[in-house]
Amino acid sequence: MSEDPGISEDASATFDIALAEYLHLSGLVFLYYDHILTFPMEVKYLWKHLGCNSKSLFLLNRYYSVLGNAIVTYSIFSTSLAPKRCRSLHLFREILLLSTQVIVCLILSLRIWAIYGREKGLFAFLGVVGMILIGLASFAVFFGEHSTIRASITGEGCHSELEFITSIQAASAWEALFLYDSLLLALLLYKGFKTRRELGRVPLLEVVLRDGSLYYIMMTLANLANIFTFYFTGPFMRGGLSTLSSATSVTMTSRITFRLHANAHKETVESYELGTLRFAAAAGTADQHNANSRPSPV
Image (tube, rainbow, N blue to C red):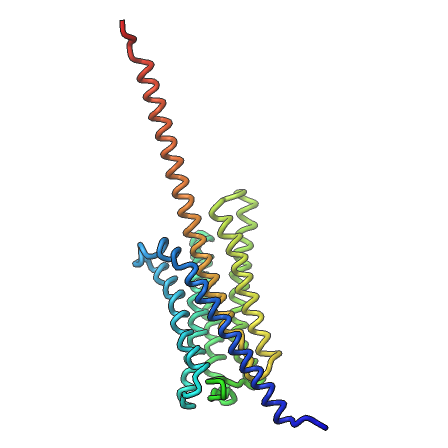
């Protein structure tokens, strides 16, 4: 007795939809949980000088993704949306994912640029490469053959179905991001080896290079895993790791920033304490000298 192909396809689609929902929720929990854990550090290191452009960009990265994913989650699990509304929310999700990655790449590029001493040539190089890759990613997401992307209401909520050819095109946006992340990681590792060879150990820079490399690798692996879903999974599961990959990028970027501020604050405190000890030692020596120079009573 053969199995009905229609029933098999429906079961496979239902499984893909459920798996995509669970993976979306896992990315959401990861993002929100880490946001709560690091909120005290955000208040301590960033809220005192909100006018700074770099800190404003960092806070945009933190809260844009948090608020945007709340809307996406509503659309994924809502079964009462009109089909037109579902398609609009699908477009919103694509814009959210792309713009979030642009913000992350901008922050990380500024970090790399700072590590290299704000070289104008590197700034121009990263800017040109970034604009080219953003252009390619935007074209792939918004100006391709989207007639085969069926964003519609299912029994589980609002979901999109990607045919294989369309999924390859959508994957190219994430592949552009993967290339840029890999470029930043290569620049970071090169600077680390060069600095160690020329200057030896530089504590703050060593922290940046060690932790930065680890965080970059985590972001790159999460992105690579999401790229694989476009090639090796079913229509409803293609891009199913997008939320988790995006959440990893946002979270790791936050962690890099907090580590920088924490270590810079630690060095400032240690320098202040060392200076205080030196001042106290100098004052004690002066007092002893004055005492020794006083004439003894007759």
